[in-house]
Image (cartoon, rainbow, N blue to C red; front, side, top):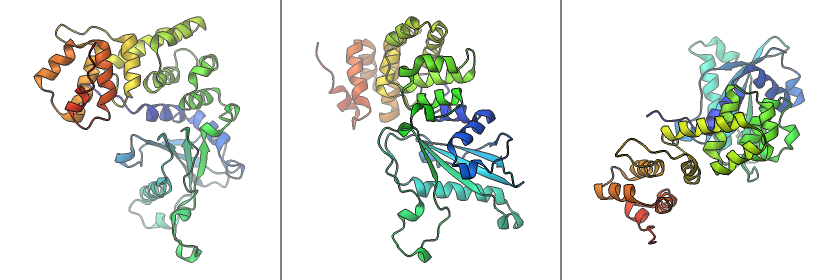
Length: 332
């Protein structure tokens, strides 16, 4: 069974991989002193990523090549920080990513080493806690002597989505809808988002899939809200996405609460001999943490009532061993 990509990365790339939306992002979020130097042509999206593998679940990146009015080129490197709290190591990580970009640009030719293109680093953050990360790598170095602070990059441009006014997120309606979704406010702005993302578009589906995978939603309540608001197409699309997520194991990386929400609304009977969707999710999570399950545990899960499975799902992420998970078993 193929694993689904990280939901934050999927939506981030969907928003900015379109050259038109990427151009609008730069127009809205770069300082005027930089935006005024960009040529009118949309940026070129450069394939590939530079994020460390160990951080791939909490960071996404996108590299854009932009033409300058001077006739030269530059790069805009957008790094999205998906952690729920700011990572104080980010300036150090960002510096290493920029060095990787310059190395790729230089290749094996020495001539390019004397004409490396400018890289404009932009950090996008959508967590709720305030941004407390140092503004630059210089602020992380323990010296007040500028002659001792040798740096690969002076700083970065921060776009803290959660700290911005809604109308300042973007003048591009689709980009604004995506950023609202990343801020986890999509349910409060359903009508605006539905109107900003035309029916049948990939981004409309990707935004709704993000809500189902990341938000802690009750599917029945959401379906009722969509129906009341006259969003019948979104309601139908929601059911299709939820069914797909169930068939693919409710996606790697779903939080336990989100998995329960999907299971309550969309759990389907499997082929004879298979457990329901909740039990299948629990079994998969247990195996990933503790290895193959003993036969008696499999039998116990298959015969359990839904509320008991709920209790085990609550315990599985933090429990140190299999026995602790099933110590959560509550008598009826």
